[in-house]
Amino acid sequence: MATKIVVDAGHGGSNPGAMYQGRRESDDALRLAMAVGKILESEGYDVSYTRTSDVTQSVGQKAAIANEEGADLFVSIHRNAGEYPGQYTGVQTLIYDDSGIKKQMAERINANLAALGFRNAGISIRPNLVVLNSTEMPALLVEAGFIDSDTDNRLFDSRFQAMAQAVADGITETLEGQRVTSSDVSEEEPDGEERRRPPMHQRPPMMCPPMPPVPPMPPEEPEELYRVQAGAFRERQNADNLLQLLENDGFPAFIVYQDGLYKVQVGAFSRLSNAIAMEREVREKGYNTYITT
Image (cartoon, rainbow, N blue to C red):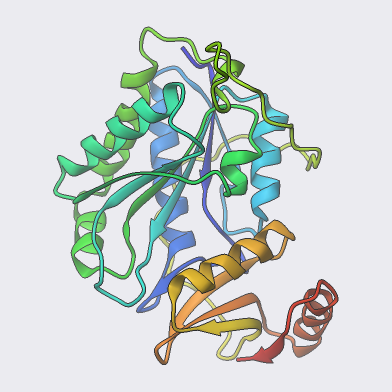
């Protein structure tokens, strides 16, 4: 079985991810990631975390941490969001392709969460996501319900520990009696062998040892924050496309739904001078930007 599992809490720091009525994806993801990791540790797995506090990380850094750790498995925890609040409900797991152990593990995680009352939104093949295509081991991204769904939020809060157990069980049930190898990382060749994806070359410092689970903390933000806006769209897919480009360039980007538009923004600064410096950096990469609050 896998001996080393890296659990990632999506987003973090100046990139809160999706937000809904003061609730931040980065907070929910951190809380659930720590709870899942704690269960895996109790069952004898060697668990590391990409973050154990509210710090800013690019998606490239997250993948590089897993590669530096020499992990056998990478699991990233997120919350989903629709084009408008209440549009969708359900849990979903994203994988690079449907080869190897990751598809079976995604199916088990989804089924376990559906048993708690979530709608099973299925598996999505997403080869364009950095945390899935730049990790040197099988990788999954779990969308633990929609953060803009009151139904999913009630389940997330009332059945939180059961959710953590469901995700952990989906991992351990799949790994039981199996051995994860590096051949499981990419698409299959005609002869049955799997082709290895190019490794990440970015290598950040090693992370600190895992900390115990922390309770959710309300966001503590200044009254006014300056943010760099790179685009505003009526269609969520257009915003997602721009978000991916910004994240691939290493920027802490996120999407805010406001006034009927999906606004793609970068950073959240209490000092205008910091926002100006970030806008200059983003603009130099070819994006059209302006500063908003």
